[in-house]
Image (cartoon, rainbow, N blue to C red):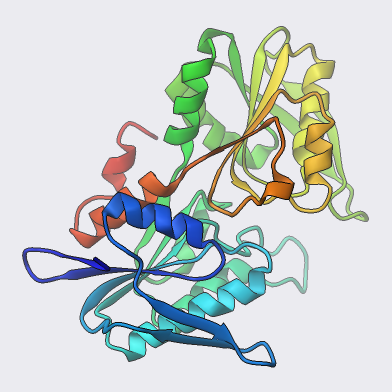
Length: 325
């Protein structure tokens, strides 16, 4: 079955781009449906062709695509899929982006810079999207860039459940790797009932990705430190944070992040660091060559499937996170 039909004749249909079809299959399994058959191919010059192989007229369509590498290709494919659904008379189109691209460019830090996260929201609106769904946006303000409903999902319950099942939380300190993560880390401390530490860092303005850690504020000596971030890209921030924590006497350092991007030398850096474990979700595909003994990958599919069910039934996505501030 490729769709769910409700009592009032609404029909849920799930569509997958080519960036991370395994995740869409997992989501479909949780919903007890099959992704709608879709023809996705490339012309000789790299242009993308899309055609849905079933009628989508009147459907509640959910288009799943993670903005992984090559990011611009997969964003364009999702935009074209949304346009095709709009022109085929889908009733409502929800763009599901487990990892939302360009989210780090959410403001102008210097003159003559873009706000690319706003441009992304405008592109999806122009293509015909009625609603956006994303997991752990880089900053919450991005929700305001889209003129329509935005369902902002949090991986915290999945990650925290894994942590609490394996550690004595009375010995845990949650660590924000920079000031921008403090609010997220406060949600962790509320859930685990443990203290918070903050790492104050400075970036070298002349060298991209180069991070200089200046100080650790909080109780970390002799404790298990859980560093919480939204993504691990090059790994530079996380590795520097771990080094600073060990210098302050941390017993062990565990890293959690929603998006395991793992660009460049990230895998080698993390493997060779003193970090005990790196815990991520499968919002982006993590191929075999990026997996290593310290890496744990948890599935985000059940959470996305539950959110899709709530949207389809006009329920409350917020109810999935009741008790989370």
